[in-house]
Length: 111
Image (cartoon, rainbow, N blue to C red; front, top):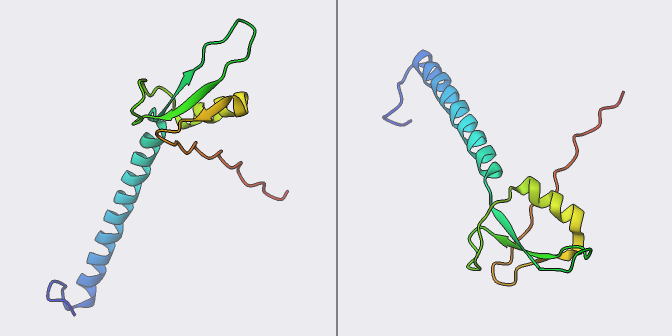
């Protein structure tokens, strides 16, 4: 057994409880950070100029792409634009973005 741990069961149980609580706090902090990360703008689209009446097309870029532009789209917005414009939005050959996967629908409960 480790020299850092107390030898008796009651103190080991207290330590176990404290560590479980600390782990729960860390897991909550990770979840919050992941939610913030998902909400951050990580994408942008360079739209091609078109004549009026012609549907727009563009190129999807990651926020860190060297091509000139500013990330202003969240994962959710990119998914919506890809759904709306489909193949008219190409992937940048320089940064090779991997578009965010569509969110899966919640499971249907039998009822």
